[in-house]
Length: 119
Image 1 (cartoon, rainbow, N blue to C red):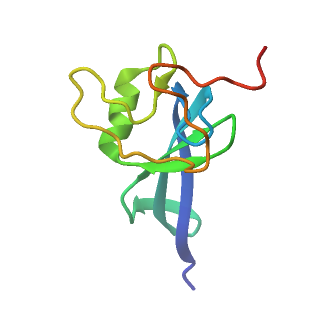
Image 2 (cartoon, rainbow, N blue to C red):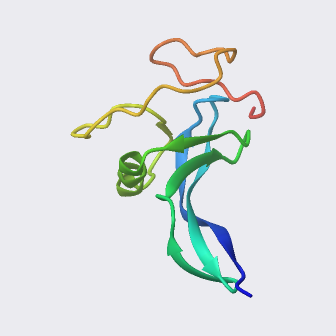
């Protein structure tokens, strides 16, 4: 009798300080990688699907899938101050696709969004 199946692991790659595209708040974002492997007798052996990368806001909990190239760009960027997710970086390779909540009120150009929970 053989026991086989799949196992999925989430690996946290970094915590980045970004501006959330869903809620508009500057907050920490968890960059995670999901890997699915073939298992034999409950031992993970080899990956059966390409790894997927996710970015999740710790303020509102919204998550979005990012490409491997964008995840590597975010890791190289490192953090610093709040960066708008999807903004073109100087000398960057490409722009992240615009995503977010269409019902959230956007701040006028050149101004940072106000956080209603801070005084």
